[in-house]
Length: 118
Image (cartoon, rainbow, N blue to C red; front, side, top):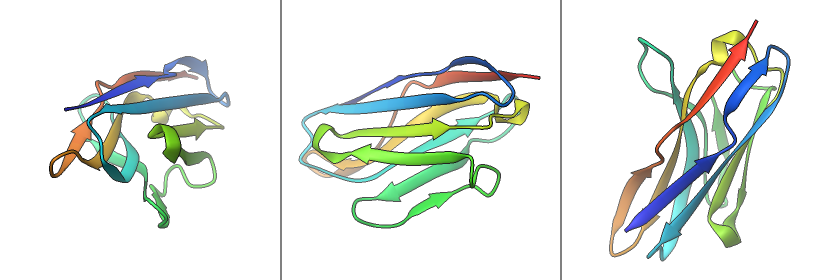
């Protein structure tokens, strides 16, 4: 099994910054994709940023230039640095990992709330 532990959410004023972390643990033999999604109230879950091992990263247009995704592959950890936060960034942020134990599967974190006040 794989466990994802997220941290770093909270309340911040518009223009502020937050850094999210997600550490994957368990019987992992390989990790491919690591990324972040978010879901605002009444809206569908959407991709924020994601990248494959050794490959390019993808960002939602709404966060380009403000958010940066990074990884510590040795620790199976993914980060999301969020700068210049806006009230519309308010959502529950979910970590996503595509990893292999016995076979490849998708795993999700429990979600961390990010609230940006105006």
